[in-house]
Image (cartoon, rainbow, N blue to C red; front, side, top):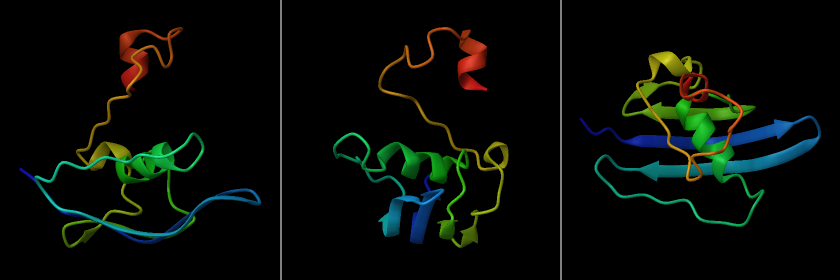
Length: 98
């Protein structure tokens, strides 16, 4: 099942450091979508917010008509696979996905 993902005016701050500023983005269900950019530009942070691993400082994330901004990761039904399988090589396979 494919669903539209809408990000509206998302901001993500870590202390005084703003890593995402006023991001508005539409990803339509079934669409092949890629985030490209230099290291530190907010690609992983954006994906983490969609998955629910990070919460935006402000703004909203919608799956279709449902606002999932405050919905915990385990209730979103979204997964993410990192490009580098050895991102956390000191962890077991199970620990890497939990």
